[in-house]
Amino acid sequence: MQSTQELLTIALLYFTSFFSLINPLGSMPVFLTMTAKLSKTQQKKTAIKAVFTAFVTLLIFAFAGQMMFNFFGISVNSFRIVGGIIFFVMGYDMLNARFSSFKSIPEENVKEYVEDISITPLGIPMIAGPGAITNAIVLMEDSDSFSLKIILIGIIVLTMLLTLLIYLGGTKITNFLGETGNKVMLKLMGLIVMVIAVEFFFAGLKPIIQEILTRS
Image (cartoon, rainbow, N blue to C red; front, top):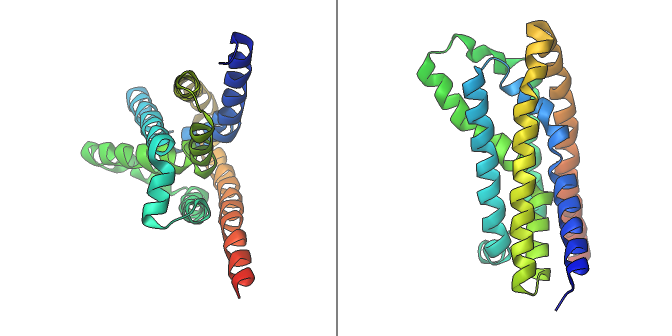
């Protein structure tokens, strides 16, 4: 049985790994640009739904991720490739400032937009990305006691709450930048997201190609 100091050390390691992989400070500008034209209430709803989606996803994969991957015959590398494709399309739209086009769409379509982006790409794979999902699976398998599993779940909750607070606090930046500033940030972040997409894609593709070459 671990001592209190050991449990605190493990909890810190869990938190550091999740916070680094989810990187809410890095994804906050993307959230801001995608919700720049929304009202404060809609921005808040989007942030809450995105974080809740990511939280549920991480819990599901933490408890049943490895079993699901084995059952469907998929790998984390395949997940990275799909995530890369989603990121690339999203980045391309941002680079062309297409997210601002919904300004003239009726209210019911704005609600649909909020529902869409809060699940994908914000909830998955931006917050609950391949790295965070893999981390949840591995750490749950390594947590060989009930107390460690509780700590892991608690750390996931803490990280999600911090992500939500960072997203909600970042809306002040949108108001400060104004319409022109938001458009500039939208295009800049679109370019960055496309670069991230390429990294995701090839990070997943490289091991698969190496495995194919090894087998042949």
